[in-house]
Length: 119
Image (cartoon, rainbow, N blue to C red; front, side, top):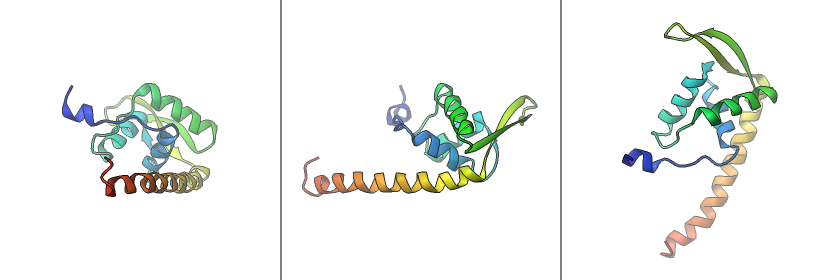
């Protein structure tokens, strides 16, 4: 196992939905491109497996946060492309706010321990 693989962390439940929504903000993408963008933008810390990604995509479609359409990939293969909906854009703001609140709360708990030398 490489150092990079050891540095990878598990995603908290619900985090993948937020990451997919954010990844689709600039425009449509197929599943493999979404997974690669998350991996690349997290400096290879987050790796999204197909077994997690595609159920998340189906869940987001069901909620009306993304839509899907058939298309052709860069290597001339059939692919399903996902796009953020108007409802999904609004939900991205909601989910981002929730995530930021959670991150602040965790930081409040961790910061005193670091200052007090408890780590």
